[in-house]
Amino acid sequence: MMNFEQTENQIMIAQMVRDFAEKHIRPNVMEWDEAQYFPKEAFKEMGKLGLLGVLVPENYGGAGFGYFEYVTAIVELAKVCGSVGLSMAAHNSLCTGHIMYFGNETQKSKWLPKLASGDWIGAWGLTEANTGSDAMRMQCVAKKDGNHWVLNGTKNWITHGLTGDVALVLARTGELLDSNGITAFVVERGTPGFKGGKKENKLGMRASETAELIFEDCRIPEENILGNVGDGFKQAMKILDGGRISIAALSLGIAKGAYEAALKYSKERQQFGQPISNFQGIAFKIADMATRIEASELLIMQAADRKNKNLSVNKEGAMAKYYASEVAVWASTEAVQIFGGYGYTKDFPVEKFYRDSKLCTIGEGTSEIQKLVISRAVLK
Ligand SMILES: Cc1cc2nc3c(=O)[nH]c(=O)nc-3n(C[C@H](O)[C@H](O)[C@H](O)COP(=O)(O)OP(=O)(O)OC[C@H]3O[C@@H](n4cnc5c(N)ncnc54)[C@H](O)[C@@H]3O)c2cc1C
Image 1 (cartoon, rainbow, N blue to C red):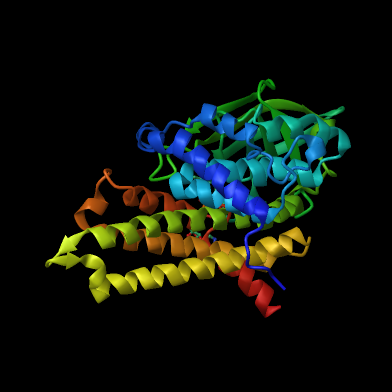
Image 2 (image 1 turned 180 degrees about the horizontal axis):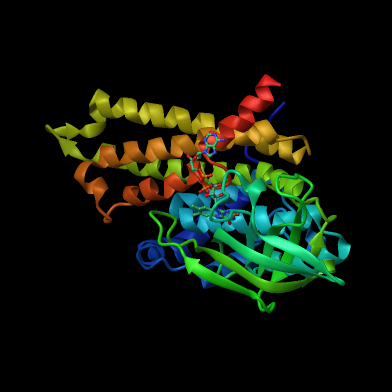
């Protein structure tokens, strides 16, 4: 049975993240958004609070928490700034998570303490310009040369593509469309032949850096392979199963942020001599938002509970991500509507929730891909 009460750790983490976000993030949110500035300094501060190694065991320098605490932290951050929430999710679930789940002892001891402390920022490269949903057709190749592998190709849309100190890169080492033909490599910044490329100019999540990774005859020692040669695609799918819970949490935080702002505004804004919350047209929007947000939270906690118990979250993570992300887009749209003209300006927070939310139905598998995963699970 699931327990719906927040644990002491969750209550403590929520408060800590709220305090941090009010002090270090909220005052700068719009400036970072306008400038597309990734706040590396604030992000590294989060490392000191344990937020960059939430799931990493303490013996590797992490906080050693589970998914309930992880979800709580992302929700609280995303209520203030989706971009920082997205960066936290990508750093923890993707790069750090991949090394934590599939690295050997030497690899974990080498990279996890740096990532968990925030000394190093992590990136994870699966997507390419022509292969997003269809990642198995990737063109980035690695060829063996003695005890090295030579990597050539480009990864696109990579969170921390320029700032990341280390990138986990999936590359083809076998035949096209062979699910055993892809391998995971750890590539450190500064490795000759590895550089960042174009930075994307985005609709939302503008303070989370998204950029290209370029590999030109980049030689990687074979000890930087995670697991076995050919394991990469299956590893990546497992990482995305868990990662989707973090994007669902990001969605929930955005939806809650938009809802809380709209709820407050609806009680303050007067039209026709009364608060607009008195009008059924507005009150029912609030009721629908509250209901769908709670439903999102339940799906997310179900997936988090299963993940904590080491059960498969293939279906549950996809359901949580699909539902919560669609709710985030819908709830932030309704929030703009409740704010009327003011909602359409940058003087109020809802336009940013509206812009940021759309990433959630796209990143780590679009809503259509989530439905593919869910339908495969329920139809089998
Ligand atoms: C801000 C941001 C950050 C990101 N960070 C990372 C990162 O750190 N690392 C990384 O590897 N990637 C990252 N991505 C990439 C992201 O995961 C992809 O954008 C996503 O998987 C979709 O791929 P695509 O953009 O190529 O769209 P496409 O795959 O080209 O899809 C286009 C449309 O076709 C639909 N579609 C595709 N196939 C099917 C199908 N079989 N059935 C029905 N509909 C289908 C899609 O749902 C979508 O609506 C990021 C993207 C963004 C925007």
